[in-house]
Length: 67
Image 1 (cartoon, rainbow, N blue to C red):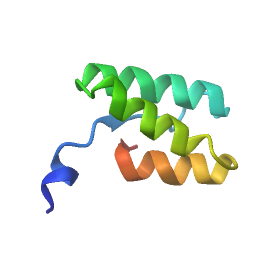
Image 2: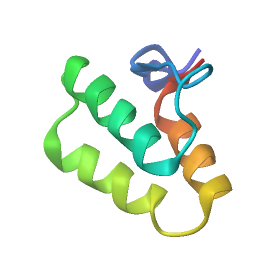
Image 3: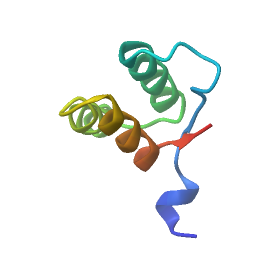
Image 4: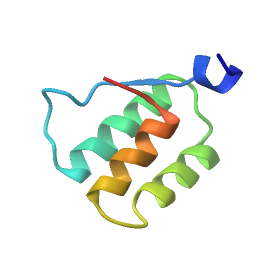
């Protein structure tokens, strides 16, 4: 398993509010709890928000352990 895979913050979105703003809020809280630097979070957020809802989910799965 690559080193980055082991360090992904856990993001629980199943069973929660499914709108993009709520998911980004949960991702921000998970990132902060895991100690993700603000600069990295801003990069993730910018990438996630650059397209549609499906893209947002794909980007978050790239940076978080989504469950």
